[in-house]
Amino acid sequence: MTPTIAKTVFVLLAVGWYLIRVPFARKSRRTSVARNARGARETLLLSISFSGLGLVPFVYVATGFPKFAAYSFNPFQASVGVVVALAALAMFRLTHKALGRNWSVTLEVRENHKLVTEGVYRRVRHPMYTAFWLWAIAQALLLPNLVAGLSGLIGFGTLYLFRVAEEERLMIETFGEPYRAYMTRTGRLIPRFL
Ligand code: SAH
Image 1: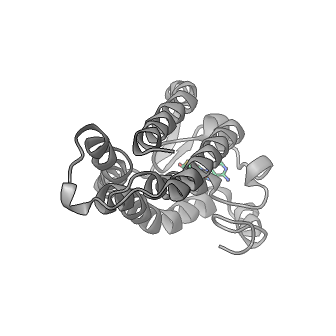
Image 2: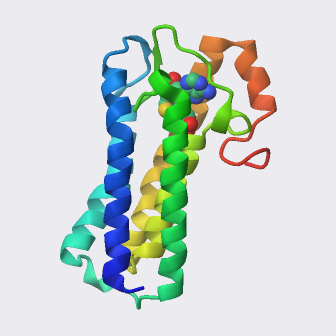
């Protein structure tokens, strides 16, 4: 394991993520939206998350910026990062498959929106956010730079903290009791615990 391999794995994580998402993003453009809860706040949160998971680490991979935040590379840490990156990709794929046309990049309810409670959604309410957390953890382990490594946790963490309760409110308004019951038997990110 070398710094170059670790950086390459991070780039491949992003490419894999993109390839998994593209067909679902196409499909979702063809599905009409019944209710959109996107406002200036959501757009700001999405930009913060995108900067932390994408912009900042990619500037680092391309240029080494910001140099002052660099620390010495640890091959074991990076190897764990590879495993976490693979787990993130696997989880991301499973969640997109399970959500299908009910997926949106933002808070939306689609025409004929179905509440998904099976597959990876059986015990966890937000497994796609679990996948994003795994990306952010992989980023922190793979990139030996405090700014580029930690920006994903901070950027996605901000989106997550401000969005998740609002998303659950939207789901309760849309599905009512079945979603409340679903909440009692699931965890947000990890079965039961979290
Ligand atoms: N928070 C979920 C989904 C992220 S995609 C996860 O992390 O896996 C965001 C969209 O998914 C929201 O607009 C919402 O309408 C929809 N959504 C969230 N939970 C859902 C569920 N259990 N079934 C169907 N749609 C859901």
